[in-house]
Length: 64
Image 1 (cartoon, helix red, strand yellow):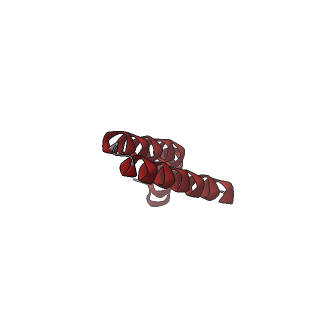
Image 2 (cartoon, rainbow, N blue to C red):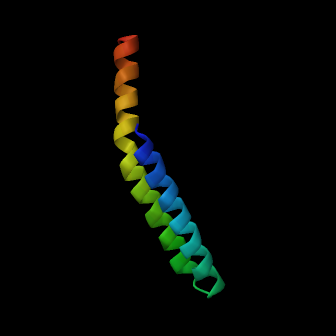
């Protein structure tokens, strides 16, 4: 995992938080929820390959 990925995740978190708060204060809670969900899906799509690699490494380590 590179430091760039951590910065990307932090940037998405900051942007999603700001957009979510703006939408909540303007009375659009449904849109704020969708923005939060979209941010979560984007970050998960970046992290899933690393999690898969972790499980493969653990499987090779324990020879399961």
